[in-house]
Amino acid sequence: MRAAEDAQRHVLRFEVCAETLAAFREARAELRRRSAASIDDEGLLLEMARLVLGGPRDDGRASYQISVSVCPDCERGRQQGATNGYSKTGTHSCSSSARD
Image 1 (cartoon, rainbow, N blue to C red):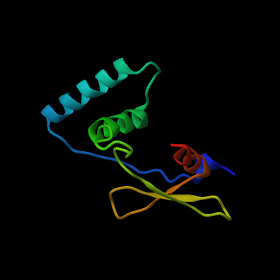
Image 2 (cartoon, rainbow, N blue to C red):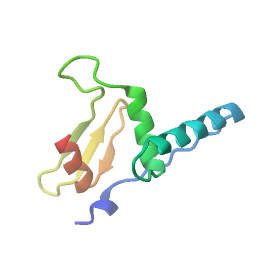
Image 3 (cartoon, rainbow, N blue to C red):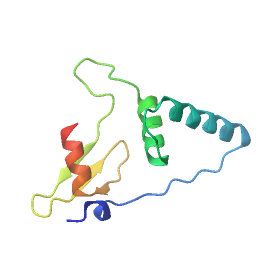
Image 4 (tube, rainbow, N blue to C red):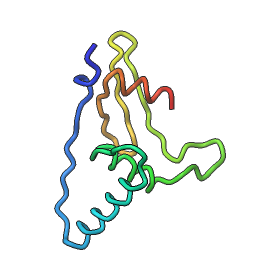
């Protein structure tokens, strides 16, 4: 199965003022300095989201939750976070979510 092709991609686009752009660029540069390996835009945004969400506030609980449903027949999955919408994921994404 072509897991990478099965995962639905989404576009994020923001129009911001100069101050916000400058702050974003500084945050991006700082995260790239902290990263041991090269980090692409997707990794950068994911790390920013994880930093904002913070660590677990209660022992034994995750800092945030994502619901993942996997079809047993085709092994395709859907994941849901804080929004009401679902995102389709490929088999690779579902496998990595199941391990976390």
